Image 1 (cartoon, rainbow, N blue to C red):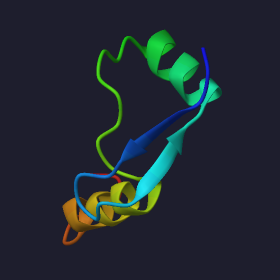
Image 2 (cartoon, one colour):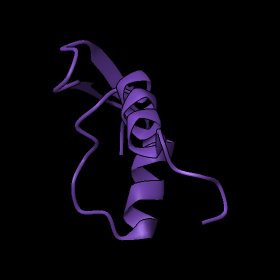
Image 3 (cartoon, rainbow, N blue to C red):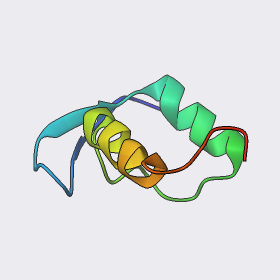
Length: 56
């Protein structure tokens, strides 16, 4: 496997899907490559968690 350059579907920036990340995805059974760059993934996760209490 080699690093892959992907394009974020939210911001349109290119990001690297590293060999290590690809191995991790494969080990977890994920069949699809990430669609968002790490920054957009973080933002999206924060938006989903807004308004929720921790430990619930």
